Length: 387
Image 1: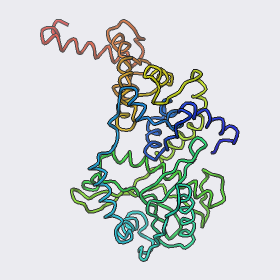
Image 2 (image 1 turned 90 degrees about the vertical axis):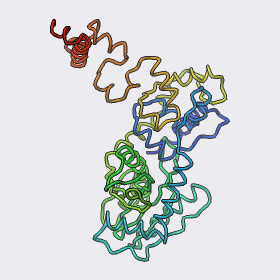
Image 3 (image 1 turned 30 degrees about the vertical axis):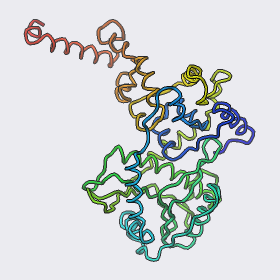
Image 4 (image 1 turned 135 degrees about the horizontal axis):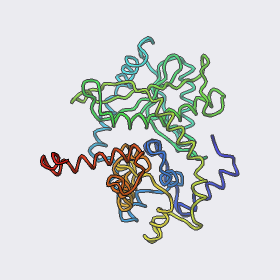
C-alpha cells in the first residue's frame, strides 16, 4: 500500500539525508527484495535498502569489502542457456509451460510474443501492462520476454525484470525463472531452488499489483472472478537437464515465500520508525570518515547469520562485529533458536559449566548434560568408570 503523500514525501526526504543528499538511491532489484524476506529481523538491511544506500560501496569504506556477486563465467553461461531456452520465439519454453503447468490447454502454437521496447523503466512497465492486458483479452498463449514490472516499496516504485511471464489461454499469468544450475534426476539443489522461489515471489507480488490495476481492484487484492487476471502461485523453474545444456523444468509452489515477502515489504513501509530511533545527523554516505561511518552503521541493529554471506554486501562487516561480541547467531540461526535466551558464547559456556542459567531451562539442562558427557569422554575409560 503506497504511503500517504505528505508522509511519503517526509520519509523520502529523511531517507535521502541518511543516504547522502547528493547521492542517487540504488535501485532495489528482485534479489535484494528476496534477501530482505530471507532475513526479516535485520533492521540494518531494511533501513539501508529502503534508503537506497549502496551497500557494496559502504562495505568497502568500512574496510570489509564484499565478494558478493555472480562470476563472469556464471553470468555468460546463464545468458547462453537462457538464449537457448527462448530460441525460435520461445517454442521450447512454452512447451515446458504447457507440459508442466497447463496440459489441458491447447498446444502453444503461434503464440504471441509482444514487443516490450519503450523508453525508460516507467515506459517499459507501462508497455508491459498494456501487453498483458492485450494478451489476456486475446485468450491465447503469449510470451513476454523480460517484461518490466513495478512494485511499490516504501512508497517508491522498484522496477523488476523477470526472465519471462507467460499468459495462458484462460487469461492466467505464470512467472518463469531460468537458472543455469543443473536439475539432476528431476531435482536441483534445495538451497538454490529456495533462492529462486524467493526471487520469483517478488515477481509474483509485482504481477499481482498489475492484475489489481487492470481488474480495477485495490492494489494487493487478487480478483478471482471469471475473466479477471489471475497470477498463478506455481512458477516454472527452468534449468539444464543433468549435465547437458538441454532445458528441463519443474513447477515450484511459492505461496509460502510470497506470504513472507509480502509481510517483509509491509514492514519496510514502516522504516520511518527505524530511522526515527537514529541519532540526529546520522548519514551512511560512503565518503565519510571510517570511524563516523562505522558509528552510523552500528547505530542500527543487525541480525547476522552465516546465510548473509551469500546475500548481503555488508556480511563481512557484520560477521566481524558479531564474532567480536560473541553472538551465537554467527554460528547459525538454527543454533540460535535452540539456545533460547542464551545470546552470547559466554552465556552458553557459563550455563554449561553451571555458573549461570536456570537449571529448569531445557537449553541450560541440555548444555550441562553435554558438558558432563564431554568431561567423561575426555577422562577416558578409567575416568568414566570412577564416575
